[in-house]
Image 1 (cartoon, one colour):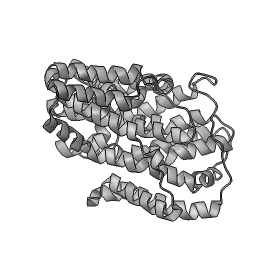
Image 2 (cartoon, rainbow, N blue to C red):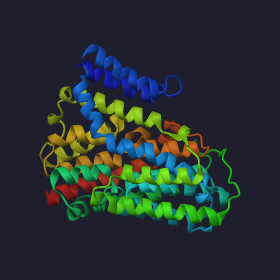
Image 3 (cartoon, rainbow, N blue to C red):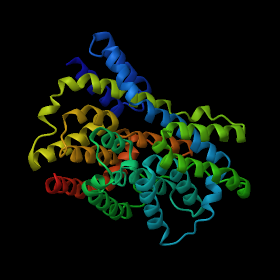
Length: 393
C-alpha cells in the first residue's frame, strides 16, 4: 500500500505546491521514495516508461518545433491573413475542432496555439482567451475518430475497433461537448482571473520568407501525422525530423524550450500509477455491468486521468474493461482532462507553448477556465456516452 501513499503524495504536491516545490522535483522525489521503500520496482517502472516513450518523445520534439516556427515568423505571417469581427471567435473554435478531430489533438496544440496568440495580438484581443481554444478543443473534440487521440489509437489496437465504432459510440458525445463547450466559452467573463495582459508583443517579420520556410514544414508535419502512422512512421519521428530541418534552416537550437517538467511529471506519475494499480481494486470500480456500472467507470476514468494523467490511467484501467465498458472509460480519460492541465500530455504541451510565448500560465489559471467550460461539456458528453454504450453494447 506504500505505492498508493507515494502516488497520492506526488499528486498532492503537484496540485498544492507548484510554486514552492515544483513538480520537476516533487514527483521524482516520490518515485525515489517508492524505490527506496520497495513499493516501486525497477522492471515494472521501466515497462511503464517504455509504454509512454512514443508520446513523451513527441512532447520533446513538438515544443521546440513550435518555437522554431514562431522564431521564423510563421505564425505572425499567418495571423495577418485572418480578419477580425464577430465571426472570428466561432471560426477559430470550429477550426480547432476540425483539426483536432481529423488530424489529432497534438496538431491542434502545436500549430494552432501560437497562431491564435498572434491573431489575438494583431486584433487587440485577449491572448489568453484565444490561446485556450486549442487546448479546450484538444479534449472536447478528440474522441470521434481513432486518429484524433493517442488514447484512441491504443484502444483501437488492443480491442480491434474501427472508425465506425468510434463514430457510433463517441461521435455524438464529442459533437455535444464541442457545442456546449462553445456555449460556455462565449460566456467566460472578461476580466475574470483567467484573463490577464500578455507580456508578449508581435514583431515585424519578413512574411514571404516566413511563409516560404514555414509552409512546407507544416505540410510535412500534417502529412506525417495523417499518413505516417499508417506506414509505420511515429508522430515523434515526424515532429523531430521537421524540427531538425528548421534548426538547420534557422541555425538555432531552442534548448530552453524543451518541456522537461512535463516529461518528468508524466513519466513519474506513470511509474507510481503502475505500482499502485494492484492495490486499487480496480476490478470493483471499472468494467461493472449495466448503466450504473458505466457511470462508475466513466467517473473513475475522469478522476484517474486528472490524478495521474490520462495515458497512465488508460493503460492501468484497460485490462479491466470489456467491449462495452471501454467506451465510457475512454470518454472519461479523453474528456476529463479539460478540468486540469496535468490530466493529459496535450495539456502539458500546451502550457509549455503558451509560456514560451510570454504568457504567464499556472495550473490554477488553467483550472479556472477549464472548469467553467469543461463542466457543462462533461454534463452532456458523459450521459451521451453512457446512452450509446447501453444502446450499442
